[in-house]
Image (cartoon, rainbow, N blue to C red; front, side, top):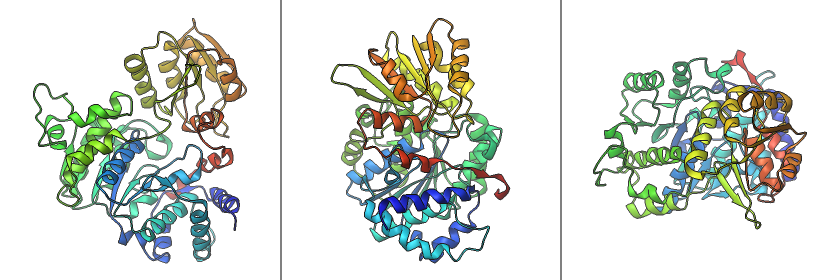
Length: 443
């Protein structure tokens, strides 16, 4: 089998959709030898910020000398981004070997119960990390938490970033319902840490922790922030941040919140995995997470900001960052959004700041129509110069002379931009592996 054939096999698994439930994953993992039983995990759920928090945790623990595994989704360009060892992408040869190893096991599932793409990839990752004898795996949920395939593990800590509206058709139409799905990763006897701030969502998380007799650290409280770095001198107001966070290379106030969440998690686990202040400082100062407020400066001095603000909460964070951290007097917005997102709200949030706006289709069957996006942006900002383009390439060409360009609306679009800018190898076909259709009947 070649790597291209392995990717094609994984691509064909999309036909089985995304089934919510753990039965298939438990069974496939058992057939694979239950590799999760030989590993330690930090399990991370939430609406936004999961990947960034995972990247921070991984960087800190790797700086402390641990052999780390990192499992995240979706990928920006290459499927191999999903499974990393010490922040090195899994090799093509390893992907081939793991696919070949799981294929015979998949034949033991009856018709109508075939594992999905994400279920297969989850067990691939578990087997790889166990074979590589990882000391710790930073383990990001795919969708939700309670019925997500990643939830077959019992972690050292359960981490919930925040709760906002996204994937409502599968997770629920209220913040309380969405929080219940995310809080489903909380296990009896396993400490939980959260940065969720909304009262409706937080009440659900707190109730889940009480019901499972689990200590919960809320980093939005004064006590929670102090718990993140207990030996830190914290004079003044509760908004003061630990000194380690001042060296954080990821932009945006939301990343500081993610950093406090990561620090609180490290502190909660100090008794099981000791980490020095030096390792924390080194880890945070070197953390890297592409596609999230990633500023690219071209040789001409032209700046391109790439951010996967794919839901209403993400758009709000991007707008705040543009106002506070970049302070550009005017910028060009290139926007492409999935149809199943709240794209009208995203347009309403981001369009008023832009001088020029180019709307584009995302290279996906789920893409919102560029002309409909343009109309929504025009309603939000009648003074801007707005045009619908046929592709991201066309939009980038039209914005070639603009000093500051923001590309956003979808991580899928950000991945395409990284390829077009020559910042990532071209693997356009592998972005299609992010596509799936959920089967609500399986809930």
